[in-house]
Amino acid sequence: MAATQALFSSYELEFFAEDETISIVPNFTLPGCSDNTLECIGGAYGPFLPNRPVDVPLWMAMALHQRKKCRILPPAWMDIESLKMVEELERDRSDAFQPLPFHYLEIAHMLFTHAKDTFGGNFYKVHDLVESVRKVRMTKIHSGLKSLAGPMTVKLNNLSAMECNLMRGLFQGALDRFWKLAQLQAAPDAGEFETQATSSPPSGPRRQFRT
Image (cartoon, rainbow, N blue to C red; front, side, top):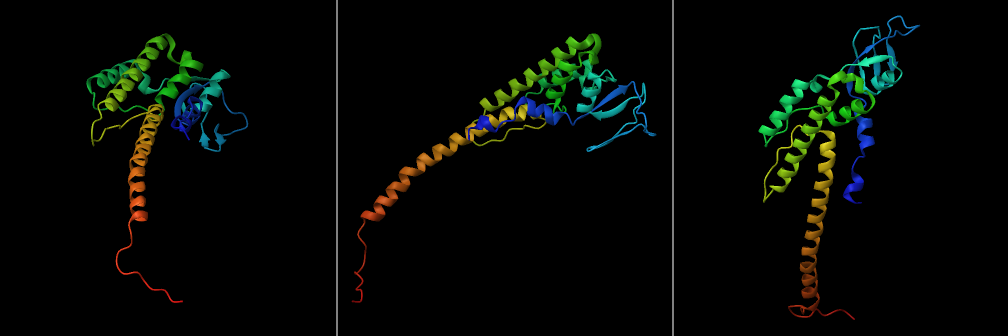
């Protein structure tokens, strides 16, 4: 199977990211539920009370937002000052990646696409900062791979799911080529050994068989 076929699609990565927790401010209550909580397979969420923040999975936040039942609160890491600091540290530290949520790119994409009002008038600033951080990190990844020479280790801590997914294809392709080269190098040696084994006469006296 080709390396690219083993990668996750962007839709699959977003599906995984939908289980991440995010805060919302609901504008409703749950009729018939004394504690205003919602029982789901993944657990109980709530209480849902107007103007009271509550943590829910991203998929639930997006569904409620689509129905205008809540306001999504921007994650702390998407604060403008926080993103500026991350961008600066990413540029200054070429040998390390700054800690970000594992699905930060998928979360940002879903919020930018389906919940722009989450950021109010700061939407474009936040969008540009996230994109800048992504580009800096990808440049560092490619630069690190190009600088590999001989046996050495590379620090890849704090990579996100999408970044790991991209590197997975690169590493799988490289390892697959290494394996094929090793097989090609081993094949002539094996053929030479087999030729020598079949052409060399047996040493020592010939054994007499019973008749």
